[in-house]
Image (cartoon, one colour):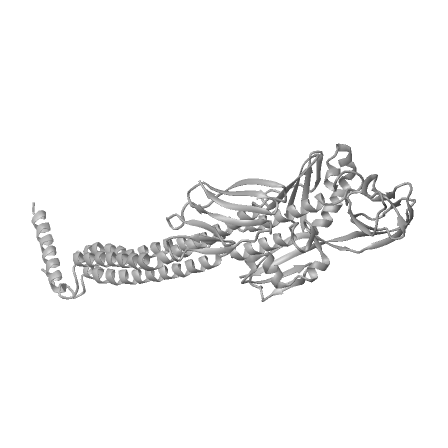
Length: 228
Length: 145
Length: 171
């Protein structure tokens, strides 16, 4: 006897409707997740930017500054203190063209030497260098004796007013010779690696003024910060 | 009979309703795993090594340009002249390199007659530079403290 | 023997009951087959639509951005190699140094051209390009030449002190 079944919906038709709704909800959730993933991708791409152009400009400018043929160095990695003070942004841009349209600052031991603009968001690169300040030391020497300079120098200037000298020897090597007697002032380059002894020929008379430029060096850190 | 019918229909009822939810959860998990791979940190040691290489090069250049303490063409030339000269000068060399590099850098200077400085660590970015002298090659290693 | 017809009758009754119920509900909702077809259609539509949206819009943009980054780094690396190739002061020099460049960017080859104190990257895709100025000492008189990606790329420095010339050579 079939009692009329209670009018409750067939579970199979329940399945049909609920499935579709659940599917739609699931697809919406998936779309939202794809959106979130795209946002994360955007963030990752932005965070991976290591500013290669700025970094290269900083490295190249630092290298140009401490190179041997730079206008602010005496020799490689040895900076000239006075030339540094007179370095202007325009001269630096001529020396390092990558800085042409960029904001930059050059610091020596933390103190800013050249700057233009505000490079706070830029990349910085450091080099280790020596800053040398040379002062002149002058002494008057009798020409009939030899003189040993206590501090090493790379060049020495001799003035022969008031002396009659034909030959000058530096550490035994002849560096100046003029049979009629040396006149005026002469500059001689010598080696920085040796202590210098200057002697004259045996017949020399009078007094010679000897000027040397011993160097004082101190270690510094050169920092270049560039933001293009 | 009604019980059988109810039980026969109840089991499929449960499974069918939850399947899309499970599928969606699996799909979301896959997508988020891919997204997590975006956030992996990129290696930075390449830039640190370039800076350390520059520091090592500077230390070598400064040493190669310095007058020797006693005899030889430069400070480095003096140190590499002979094993005896190296033993005599190694303390002064170590002090000089430490003054050049400062407090936050450790170093190791290897010469043909021996080495001064610290042991090179593994897994840390190090910079390297080499200087050719009359007595052989001098290699300077530099790393951050 | 008597049990079987009874079972038959009850099952027949059940089947009749079920079909009668289906008949009742057919007006209210869809059958399982139709709903499954709808689901499949919906999922296919979703996947198709999402793929189209991604590959037509988002993916090419990201590929272009990544290619631009790779080009920037390659150009900066090439400029650094050129600057490092200048030898110290000497009477007469001849230096050849080989340089590594990525073979393709965004799937196609490119060229790095040195002209007028700059290096420039030429690529068929308009959003991938770059130009950098070179920082060279005064001894360098000229920089010229082109590198083709995929060829053997070499820097050739030659000349005497004060007049060095740098050429980018692709072999």
